[in-house]
Length: 211
Length: 211
Image (cartoon, rainbow over all chains, first blue to last red; front, top):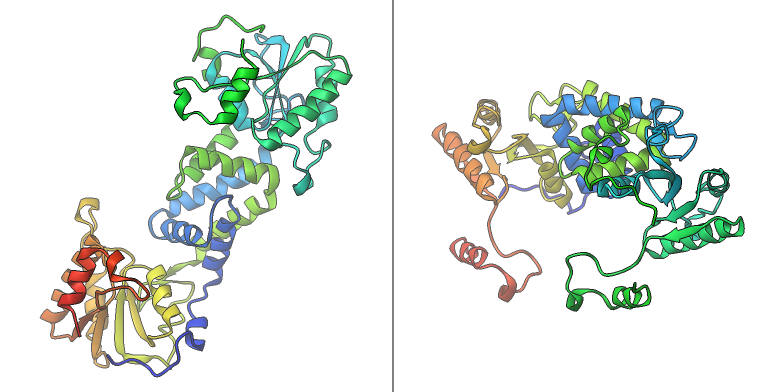
């Protein structure tokens, strides 16, 4: 093989193909959650090689979303109006208020088709290590909303993770201190599962919360 | 529980929170390779909630890349100039031409620090099932480039996958038919591995290609 006498990992390799526009795109894609260097590079090359119209569409969608999407004045979820579609729906049951962490959790609740009350979306969860406290999840706004006279029950539906449980605890205590009736989604064995394969903590909770 | 009498999966769930700007963003993100519905939603919510400056930066990076990144006139890799940095580098060994599938493969070759010739980047591989034939990988341009008088050896470094091997075969045959000296990266046992754990096909190839 006719190979150069340069040392491995030499200056040549470092001086390689640095294209500012491509590198900026890879850097910007890396800021997406769950995307590392290799995925970002693969996405950038894919867009430039096979889907330039998709790249332009994504650029415009990003700008439109940043310009138009804001928080619902009542429930804090994302909306393009002053009040989101659910909060504006007079057919829903105003006696129920369900507290969830994110719009994705809200969407999961909606997909069950078993709930027709209103929501309050915390847009996060308590996470002291990340510096996210009660102010960041809009606790005062929730207390104001839950204090409206037609609300009879606040259902706390934060996730059943450590942070979600801590958030549920803080939210529930604050609501109870103001005399609100607070419930929590039940913990238990998932539908369709066999006890043998369910983790012990879940079985223990299902036993404690037995009906 | 005070729950509505609506049927599960009813009309209410279907009528839920459809926000056009948010939905467009999720759709656009889903077109990225390897990104499904849930990841796209998570990315969109993350950008809008925690990183609007990142969203704007990504939008601008996409537009700049689409506007400025094109193919090098000599090697077909991505560049913002007429000729890419490697092709423009007079210190490199003009006797060697290495054929790779993608800019990522080219970057891997460069990182070894063991090669200082030029490249030809196919920007793809033969894939009849996807309708990608010899025209799409720029075979004629490669033949022209390899036909330049200073080129003494063409090293085919396509991937060692089924499609990469088929591409190597087609490229090699076309080059040999024009009297070019063609070599292929050697197949063999990866550095640092124990024979016991190497797959049989690799060992068989290492045996055939023994030095």
